[in-house]
Structures are given as C-alpha cells and as structure tokens.
Amino acid sequence: MAGKKRQREADERLDRLGRELVRASASSDSEAEAVASSPFLYARLRTRINAEVESREAGESWLVLLSAFWRSAPAMALAAVVAFMMFWSASPSTLAPGALSEEALLGTSETGIEHVVFADRSALSNDEVLATILNDEREASR
Amino acid sequence: MDETADNPDTAHALSAASPDGGPPDAQLVARVRAGEDEAFEELFNRHRRRVALIAGRFFHQREQIEEIVQETFTKVFFALPEFSNRQEASFAAWVARIAFNACYDELRRAKRRPESAMSNVSEEEAAWLKEQLHNEGTGSDVEANAVARDLSGKLLSRLSPEDRMVLVMLDVEGMTVSEIADSTAWSASKVKVRAHRARASLRRVLGRFM
Image (cartoon, rainbow over all chains, first blue to last red; front, top):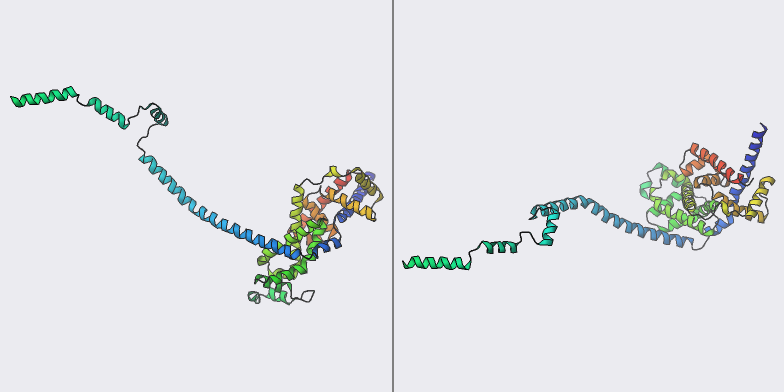
C-alpha cells in the first residue's frame, strides 16, 4: 500500500516535471511572431509556390509520356513477339547451338563452297570429256 | 465565385465577417480560386502569425519555424480547391490542421536524423534535472529556463513524433482531446491512448535521472 502510494507520488512528480519540460521546449510567442513578421516571408513563399507549380507541371508532362508509353506497351510487346516468331520461322537452320558453333569454328557445314567442291568431285574429268568427244567423232566418221 | 452563391453553407460563411473587418476568409478563398494572387496574400497575412505560433510550439530555431510556415502555406495554396466551404466556419482551424501536420512531418524527419540523443545530456544537465525532480519545479530564472529548454529538446527527441505531438498539443496548446482528434484525424480514443503512452514514455525517460 505504502509502496503504491510512493510510486504514485513519484509518477506525479515526473509528470509535473515532464509538463514543464514540454512547455519549456516551445519557443516564446515573441520569437514566433518575429518570424511571422519577417518582411520578405511572403516573397519567399511565392517563390516556393512558383517553383512547386513548375515542378508539378514538369512532373505532369512526364506522367503524360509515361502513361502513353504504358498504354502502348502491350502493343509493342505483341509486335516484338510476332517479329521474333517470324525471324525464328524464317531461320534457314534449326541446328542445335553446339552444332552451329562447331560448324562456325571448323567450317564443316554445307556452305556454298562445299557444294562447289562437291560438284567438282562429281563432274566429268577432262579425260572423260575428251574420250566422249573422240567417241562421238569416231561414230560420226563411220 | 458565383458557383458558391447558391450554396447555403457558403452563404452563411460569406456572411461571417472577418475579425479585422475585411472580407471573410471564404470570399478570399473564392477570389484565390478565381486567380487573384492578392487575395492569397491577404489570407497569408491573416493566418501567418497563428501558423508561426504553432510551429514555435515544436521548434525553436527560426529557420525551422519559417520552414513550417512556408510548408504550411504552400500546402494551403495547392489544397484550396479541395477546401470545402462547409468547413469555412473554421478556415483558421483548417489552416491550423495543415500546420500541425507539417510539424508532425518535420518531427518525423527530425527523428530520422540522429542529432540528439540521451547520451548528449551532459553531467551538469543530468544533475540539474535530478535537482529539479527533488525540488519539484524547474524554477523561473532565466538560466534555469535556458537549461530547461536545451534539455527538454534533448529529452523530447527520445519520444516518438506521435507522443511528442500529443504532449505539445495537451500541455502547451492546452487543446482538448476532441480538438486534438479533429486536428490529427485520429479518433478520440486513440488520442487518449496515445496521451497515456506519451506520459509513460516521458516518465521512463525522466525516471533514469531519479
């Protein structure tokens, strides 16, 4: 009982000092009034408001651009997907990436040059052509 | 503006004369909305003292008070289109609410800056505080007031912005719970709980010096 009473008294004392400190933390009225009566206060306020207006206008123009971009984003994404699909389907080779890189490095793919070489290999030799001509002439002379 | 003329609330508001005998606040607001800068200057001149006094309850540096005044009137300027004439009976209260919110925002910003802490309380200040706790009062001489002011700034910075806000409104502004609720948009019960917690927090801070 006595302990509770002592605690309550201590709390009251702390609350009282706390109130006084809170009041002491405030500026005096004269200090605040000195700020309020500052001669160029309104001019500074106007400058701030004008700057705020400008920044809001700039922000709004950015917002317009952003919203336009946002609206066009799905269409652009769709166009990109379609373009990619077309590119993929029109690609001449569907080889695996490993094979592709190997071809690029070793030159073993079926390039145009290879086709020419292959054509050379399968073509008639000079001797064969000569023999054919001679045979034709021989048959004609008979 | 003409569009407000048919509104009975506005009509009542417009009929309320301003304390200085000039046009009522609602009329000035309507003129600002119509693009008259002079009307805004008139509103500013009418309410700047009150806003500076509110700012002075929370801050003592001149720059901080001026910052709050500018912040408040900048918000007022941009919020004027949203100001309802139904609130006109207390245009001053509307401005005060914005000022309190500006102070609260600044307190929260200050809380994030580690400018003062309990460790900054010097031994002399701690001894002085202890003496005051036992002598029941901070005294009234100039030196004691100066010490109390510096010390209170350090001690109150330990409180949350909400606690500090409520304590200043209760103990310095002398506002009632319902007035605080109106200014902060908190419920009355929240204000009471917050006030109780704020006192307990301050007690804890001061109790370390007992």
